[in-house]
Length: 336
Image 1 (cartoon, one colour):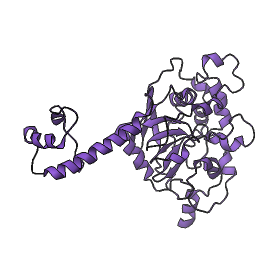
Image 2 (cartoon, rainbow, N blue to C red):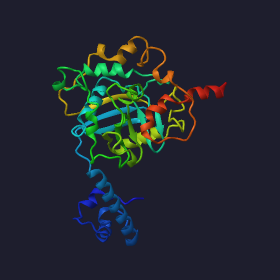
Image 3 (cartoon, helix red, strand yellow):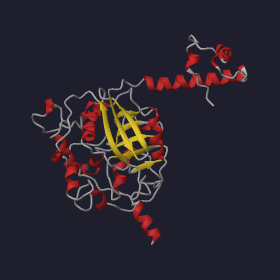
Image 4 (tube, rainbow, N blue to C red):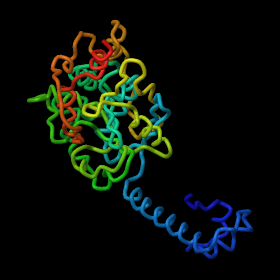
């Protein structure tokens, strides 16, 4: 096992730490001294090297300026936010959290040892609130800074500004990075091909391993804190279709977000929106599940069979969501 120094031992050592000094102090700390000095030295050096590498990885990231806690079916996931570096992205994200957008959301895309993604649907049909309705709601919410609230026209939601929120200090260099699923190469102004890309605007994904090939393609606006990363890893072990990442059990007990707690953030003017202005609340009252309440979604209407190898390219999220064979239907055929 890794050699972790107890507090009582650390207090008796002055840096730099020395394996021989550690060995001589073991009896006084109530620890066994049966291990050889050579074994202790090797283990000690490995621990120091590992600590140095990890400190280099995390020390490059800027200070944390916000925090939310996702209560999931697999336990809590604490997310630290980079609000100062990604103000537009985190402001929109926090507004959606405050208004309950992610409550009940399923992790609808799970690629083992790569990522888990959510923010599209609350049921097995993969239907969701249309992006245009969410845009309209956000334009009337506190997600739009007061300086931009006078006109509320044009790019007030900051789709183009989000491209400026790439930060060389925040990269996909370790697991647990939280990033916007909307690819920066796409246009968010409601023009061509927006029907496909718009579905990704309010989705986010969590990496389960370092993914340097994603650097510069998606805005990383947060990172999972502490041991709650293991709850995300547990979600990543959910059985899912190898091609689409859709969980096999979408109907009974798919992994989902149960609720979201906003702990703190620097945006003093962010407030909860009136319930009558929140589209998914209205849909729920009308008897829907928080989706669009209009029967088939845009995703369902454009389904088609897809065969091939698992695609790890995050930029293909929109295309793959529009072009999958539902796992639920395949299971139904097998059972019939």
